[in-house]
Image (cartoon, rainbow, N blue to C red; front, top):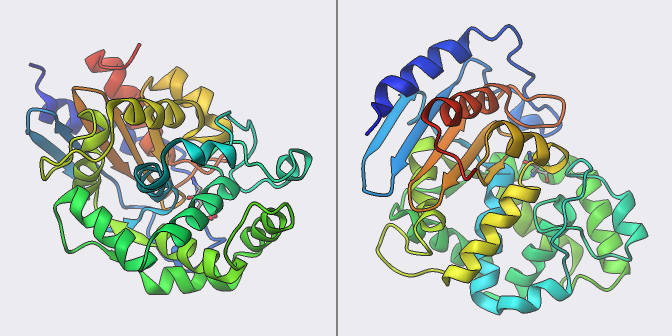
Length: 304
Ligand code: DON
């Protein structure tokens, strides 16, 4: 068994030496105050051991990482019929690009670009009695942690400035790919994205995807086939127009968020989460990608 704690500490120190630490996202004003000096990594193995370095216990805005959790809830509610409304192909374009959506008649390329995640939010709105609290409870249950919360200030900040998401939702509505009113769907979507978690919580939340659908409470959340599909989508679409690069460098299914978080996993083995708010030009955490590349290269633990 490798000495994971020592490996994480070396990777952490090396990544801190990187000359370019990226840029904190400012298009959601509330995220602009977060210090670029935050950096944490947490690893949780499927046999129950955990290892952390840096700010792995500090909560941050998980943003698009939440799209995986929303998709998994939608799959557990309506199964395969999701794929009548959303495709499963990488987009090769940024997460908020709208051109393809118009060309492809309101069918988003995948559930992780914003337009796809907005359709998933619509599905949850149509199928949950109390969408915001039911979804929050789902995430708390997956993690076995009732302290997880939405950040109302972040949700409000995005609501005031999320013009492209309003454009996406209106375009979806014009193609009849939204059942609920645009404002209701986006209110849910902005809350979903505002969820705050630590790296240590994220490795717990995502462990059901490394463990064939079984969550921290030992409950089965999804079938093995559904887990396979979500992991495949994370590998091919989890990093938008940098999904190829992430597969090439890191070689794990994963998902990023503009809050600077990344979560990745090796089925049957581990989940790993990083947080460093400085982003590269594609909107993915600069130090997070460096650290994960170093981790899978040094340990030779990747799906390839
Ligand atoms: O909709 C948005 O733009 C944000 N709430 C989430 C975007 C995001 O995290 C993209 N990921 N890297």
